[in-house]
Image 1 (cartoon, rainbow, N blue to C red):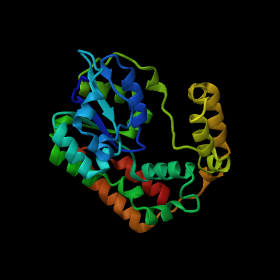
Image 2: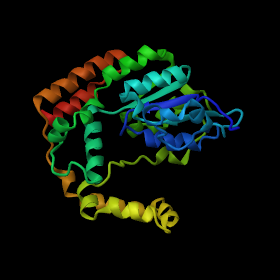
Image 3: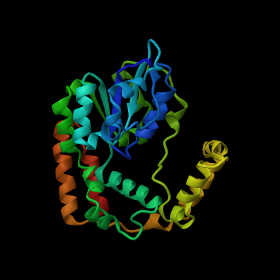
Length: 285
């Protein structure tokens, strides 16, 4: 019978806000055990049963904390309710990014996989409202705080990962009550993985990657992706991506909705988000 254990912590959001960086940092920590990133149990695999979910943490050794990060949980009220019912005492980690930057990063990711290529950012928001809705955090936090004690919830900002990653990582370690002195290699490897929309589509890279990953060369390809050579190739593609320089326009209605949500969010998390509002006004007004 497989060993089962409830997760001590779960990263629940937000998508495109630095959760991959945090996962890479924590999985290196000797005091932490984590299965693969984005388990998607509470929003997609709940029919497998909580026993299956708990078994994912069975390799956790004595003295270690175990957890997982699936950044879509926060946006899914049903997933949060299921999470609360099964793991009501687990600590939650949330990272929030300036709303329109997060939404545009998500939009860019979809385009890099061949979707929405003929749409502007505003058209994508109009036709696929979830792209913006995932960035309206106030209501999402309201659901979280209704289901969990605030003391169980860590809320950090993507801005702090960019400007002070050591401090952000240390704050997370203190929240989890693990060794704050351990310094993972990934700590300084902050990457923008929103991909290369026009370049990737032009070369049909998603399709090529799928073919390689299903072939005899999959192991070699995974190794190549971890090398500096692949990183240089990725940087080159980004440098020739013509869509990176496009002018982004947003309707007044969207701007008003986002700014109102930031005002509400400030009260909920007790953080000054003036830099977000200033950035948005400078870019879009």
